[in-house]
Length: 535
Image (cartoon, rainbow, N blue to C red; front, top):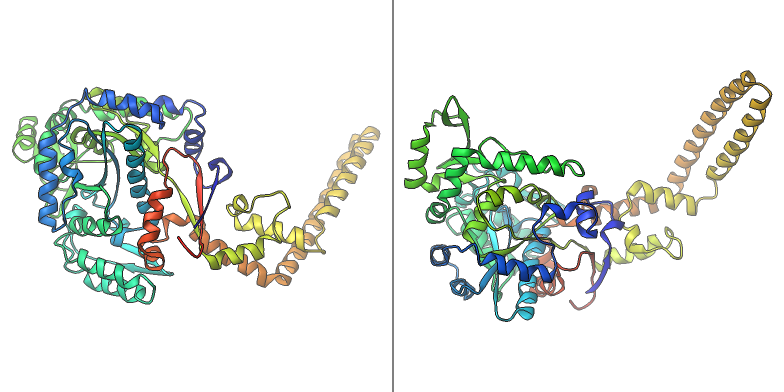
């Protein structure tokens, strides 16, 4: 597999926030405690030791989850008992069948980063942790997968936290996915893994099983933080939120500063906690001195809330604002790796972390990839020979819009366009108007009016001629359009729609291992992967 890198600033798919984060320009790093560089990892380790966590509780809970889920416990879980062991974390929703490729890129990134840090700081252990967003309740965001041009969807009547949802009725969809991939080289293997995983009792257990199939023989640890004991350990955070509503105040303050240069990613609630129970995850609101659960009859006084936290902490569920704080309070974490949107909301949180004395980690941007198959590479070679100037990069031109590429193609391959002639006429008319204006301003206005008519006519003629040229080159332009759709589905980055299952079915376990090997969160460039005969 051929690996090429291009700078993020040559790609129009990323926000100004990401561009500034990568280039380390402006004020963006004022919103983070550390920079994503090796030297700051060392600083983070030193500061992390000042924020101890209950390692015995953590390892006990993880061990129990693996046992109950029927998955072999990684040896790295027990190393977390060691005070010289730290975690590098990423997280995501529990997407059906693993979800799109960028989820795999996240996990490959933390495994790679831990390996790099272990080599550099051999006196420490670094354990990659995948945080399952098992409490999320946006089922429509995770209930489908795109596979070879088709959408496979799982429907259920269950409500509440998705991790607890039964997988009893997902077998039909898993079978349909299996039937589609079985014809691919590695299809039978991944179909069998999916079938085994989704025989587990719930979506969290299924996800744990399947992710370990994708990344075997690594020290990856997967955690489901929707746990009574872990939430009980975060009781001080929940209590502080109910008593002082600290997170809204601190996040709003930091967001005001962030908004001077960037659009804030999230808006904090007055209370950034949900009430979680069977078939329900509804947010708390403060109304007339009581804590109400939205769209229910449940109401609590502050003493009752305090008792709820003490006796039933599993019913407290953090939202996107408090989830990172909860995460850092229960893990010996020194770094978090996420996408651009995640980094944007982490940039709003530093003050909130400090207000409850929770460690704020090093924040890394995950690697992004574009995979180009051999067949698509042949199409690129054929089409882009007719699209680019001699000194231009094919890779950077891949990211131009379809409209821009079509216009470029027509300008380079059509003899009947009149763009140059129109520019020449406009130049001459401008000179003429200037000469007339020296004679009479009244005549100048008349000349401008006449020129406006001429310009409109020329533009209409140019539009007709371009339409004619498009029809003349219809086949080539259709090939270009289809190629762009394969590489950038719906005009977005490939990694957001291309599924893990589709890639594994075609390329197998060596491809997944190759992802781990070529990932490098310290390298802030976009990566293009081109197929070769061997991975």
